[in-house]
Image (cartoon, rainbow, N blue to C red; front, side, top):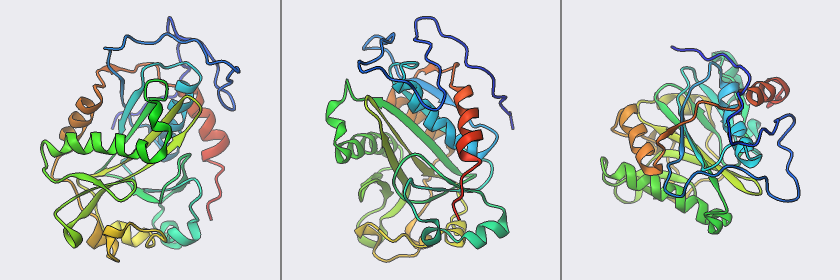
Length: 282
């Protein structure tokens, strides 16, 4: 697997060179940035870093870079971890939602991300995506329920072209199937809002070892009605697509045609050192 070395973020001509330290410094007024033309596409970053901590940190760093004025026009990131790890929501209780003893026995890291939502197990066969969007062009998405609908219905429509029946389910899930007990979850998602942008990210199961979910995670304390008290193994399923097909559907859905070469690697390294390697989640 290709490994990426964290190196300084080069200056991009036309973009404000705001240094990211403990967080982006924002003036009272919005930063002046070089915005792409309205008909230009979103940035695309297909990048998996070597460790779970680096990968979780990169989503946060992309949001910060957009908020600080270093990236304009939004970004879609796609990645997949070669190892299993658990990711808690911002306020999730690991003692309740995770089998910590099983994770320790199996050597599965447990991290806490910047966004809300529930706990997920990531790993091979689970494509991870993240989009950072700007409120200026989409002001109605400041309402959280509207943001969920906007992102998930867009992704569902793209996937349904190949797999009919994919739809937004519950608050922040994607599911496939007919009605009642035949509806099964394929994606869990979460959101983190800043002043000018928001990060929306989630999972898409396509070739995941589903039995591992029940081995490492407890049943959530808050579940959607459509779950109908089903155990993990009866509730989740894999999309009948391969990774490339899912990635191409997402790229087309978001019109993410501009490769992002200058990702915020310095901030990723800082977040890993100061936050993600120091987390005590139980």
